[in-house]
Amino acid sequence: MSGTGRVVAAAVCLAGLLILTPGLSSTAAGKEEDKAQEALQGVYAFKAGVEDGVPDEDTSKDVNVWRFEITGTELEMKPGFELEKYDLYKGAGFKLKFRLDPKTRPRHFDVTWMEGPNGLQLKGQTALGIYKFEKDELTIVIGKDRPSCFEGGKGRFKLVLAKKSKR
Image 1: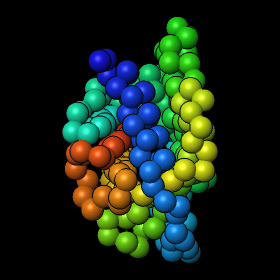
Image 2: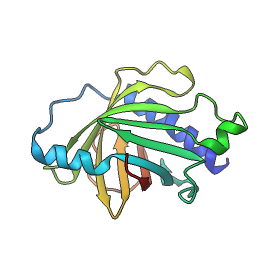
Image 3: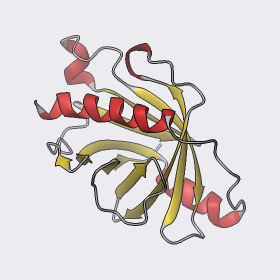
Image 4: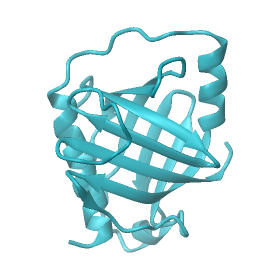
């Protein structure tokens, strides 16, 4: 399977994890959360992914392949210009609403599905995750249960994004 195909497959795998995960609980609010959220705002390119231990292709040199945007508390993945112009992977993106808890270690990144790839009915489903943001690189790991480390493995989806610009 090509790298681009695995990105779509990984999004669908994430969808499956969301279906199996119970609702989100409240996380810490306040200034620390606001600062952490502000730092994440911007446009990202896909750098790496691991789905059930299988690594994906690095496309971080070109935001036109897969484009990730964080605006407010939403994370959206959509095909970039290169895929759109050839009408590839149409409808393959997703939109998540996230909640951070930067006080925990590792930091929590909990998501609620807003829109799924190709019309999957996932609205309102949730997943628990962790994140780290270092040197314009965002790493998110999500699983059925909250992961305790940043390794990709069975039942986990790891996503590494390279920040390309601020909003």
